[in-house]
Each structure stands twice: as structure tokens, then as C-alpha cells.
Image 1: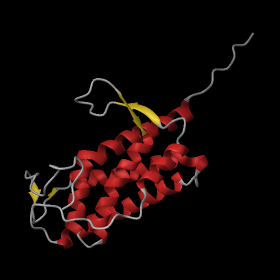
Image 2 (image 1 turned 180 degrees about the vertical axis):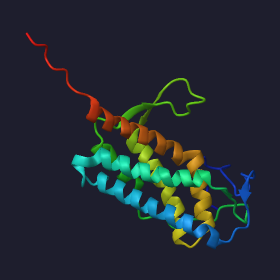
Image 3 (image 1 turned 90 degrees about the vertical axis):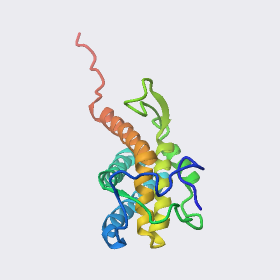
Image 4 (image 1 turned 90 degrees about the horizontal axis):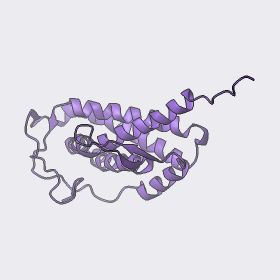
Length: 202
């Protein structure tokens, strides 16, 4: 059996029981699963292009767009009723994916040199001090969770894909994606709004 974010003792299918959706057929979940899967593929393709240096002049705007679109899909998951699997455990996802997350992370860090590190209050209701983070780490963390769900989706396990994406969105990738989106927005805002002071007239 595969483990979820948080390692051993991570989420089981029965961990979330309030307001849950039990026993729905795959047909009911298929449209949402397909939409999230397409967003995930687009996000991964966008990250890979940036990591390869294919969009040097538009790196940050492109990452902001891709991240915002992925977070929209996450918000749909967060607004949906809970997906509960028929069994108590997540099935094994099978072989490792083709996506090399270490190469992706390293490539993103290289393209984001100079703005990769930023400060973030991870939990606005629980934290009082900012913590240093890296955009490359955040985006790679989102990618890892999306790839895991895609493995279920591509194997035809619709409920398992949605269960994973939904749980991981609330527990992990939604936080990293939201933090990355705020940081990317801040870079764009500074680039557009910060104006060098003109020398005083003599």
C-alpha cells in the first residue's frame, strides 16, 4: 500500500467522515476528475518548460498563470463534498512516473535565481512569524502531489485520483500553491509598480 503525505499514519479512506460522499459511481466523479487531470497536466507541462529555460523572458508571469489555474482546480476540490473510497486504504499507484521531480526543482531554482527565496506566514491563523521558503520547492511539492493523483487517474481509478487530490490539496499542495502564487504575484506587482525615484530638479 502506498503512503500519503505525512508518511506512515497518513490519510486513510475513512479519515474524513463529515459531509462525505460515499458510494458514488465513477460516472458522477468523472467530469471533475478529468478537469483536474487536465489542469494537472497543463501545470506540469508549464513547469517543465520553465525548468528547461524555454520562457526566460516570461518565467514569473507564466508560473503565476499556471499556478493560479491549478489553484482554481484545487478550490473546486475544496468546495466539493468529500470523496471517500470504498476500501480503507489507498491502492498502490504502481511504477514511478516519468516526471523527474529533482530535475524539475533544480531547473526551476536556476530560472528563479534572485527571487526563489521568499518569506511566508504559512498558517495565517496559527503562525506569528514569517518562515523562509523557496518557490522552486513549493512548485515541485505541488507537482509531486499532482503526479501521484495522475497515476491513479491514468490507471482508471477515478475515485482514488480525486480522493488523493482532494486530501492532498487541503493538507499539502493547496498551502504550497497558495504561498507560491502570493510570492509570484508580489514579484509581478513590484515589477509593474515600483518606479525608480527621479532625481530632484536643481
